[in-house]
Image 1 (tube, rainbow, N blue to C red):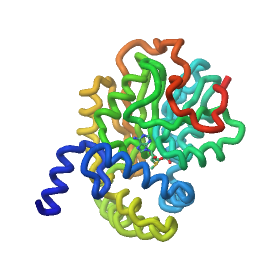
Image 2: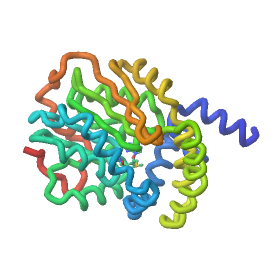
Image 3: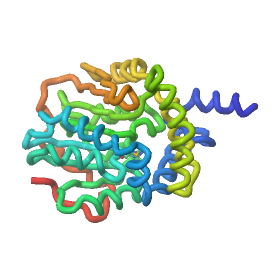
Length: 283
Ligand SMILES: C[S@@+](CC[C@H](N)C(=O)[O-])C[C@H]1O[C@@H](n2cnc3c(N)ncnc32)[C@H](O)[C@@H]1O
């Protein structure tokens, strides 16, 4: 089989992220986790340099969109693929007395998140987004910033989020897009050439910054992603471009009346690997 045929076969099998060399979903997942673990110590620095700090604007804008939910005193909120926690902190700033979880499958990323969290009461959970250690119908809001694109199976990721959302609960996926027109052309040069070079230089690891543009190219275009969301059962789905479509926010809702979450499921299940230094629920 030629290299091209091999990669076509992998693409057919994996409808999700597929770092070079990964032959199936399990291998893709491990490769993604290892990749983020390898850059965890430099992740924040790289993020801010490479995005010229615009990532802060995107996180805050996303949190603002969900202000109404975040203000509810009983809100249960999960930030998935939380990494070193910046999206989680943006949500926290708008919360009232609800409970906030940050989940990621890279221990090293969670170590950084925990170190940065100070006095904030956030529960950091080491968990795979494709197999969440939470009961059904728990959350009023599940977000994921620049993490969803890395899942080895997008439909399973959407279904797992749908499962843990309470009826009426909302999903917010912030991720990269592909801007069109002249801006798109300039951006593609930056994203495919400049960004991998700087990323590799600062982190000392080449894989992740070659993977980044490839993973964005692989990610479904907005229309396809919205259809996938509908197919899983989300209603009121939408995509809002941020900064000429360099990033964008996918939103959707689990059908049902708002606020029907089941009160008994307010913590991670006992078999989840709560991260060291776990803090009490916010109150
Ligand atoms: C690009 S980082 C984003 C981190 C953070 N949300 C942000 O906006 O900076 C992607 C994160 O997704 C996590 N991730 C990828 N696939 C995952 C999965 N299947 N389960 C849990 N976390 C995952 C990685 O470990 C990494 O920390």
